[in-house]
Image (cartoon, rainbow, N blue to C red; front, side, top):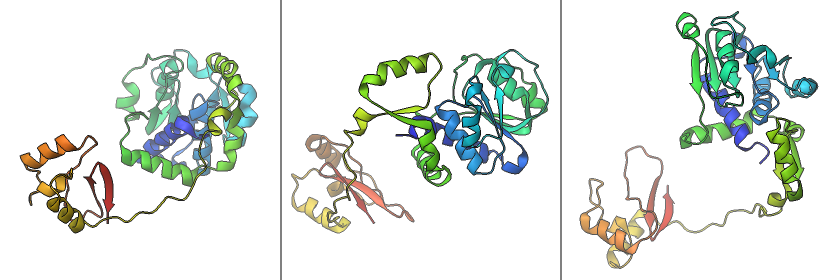
Length: 288
């Protein structure tokens, strides 16, 4: 909960930078909106990976805090917030932008040759007043980062990397636990642009069940499932009518549709697939 969607989004940005060849030896990277949820986690992750991180923020009083997270330099967001040159001095090998608008345009204009900028927010605005010059003269890449529709494989990689590359001790510095009665006042602080940290609601924490070991149950083999389904035609099972080429017969599909209100997935047999998932009696079984 301390990492949240913001931290997950920050990791998606880091992965995109890496995918496009941004490495610590390529030069410094910039994080805008550095004191926000995405910015703080991004700084912590980038610093642990060995990057020289420049943090841009409108709250310069948080400079010591951002440096503690791993930023080597803190700059005023005002230096990027106004309309600037179409092509500026090359400064950053990469950037994570949460602000948009003129800030994103200025970041692109100051990105080094073949650098990469990831855009995941629009705190300043949804406009993008820039030109094509940084893209055709410096061959920079602008990557849009979406945390909502990201494919499962990318999500899994992001959380695995967070487990490896985020110093969890730093989460205490960016998180505070609130009571439900503090929610309205904290929301007003967030809307005014002055959120102290990422908030975790104690009311929700008290309702999360304790982690327990998963219960084990025997997993039937494919042969036993098919045999059982064939013996009992009233059992809702797509496997019973499975044809060798991987298609479900019309009769079998109709029976499944009639008798099974849950999600259904026909048996798929693929050469080299380590595991197969089927639906039997409206329950998923994972077969080794």
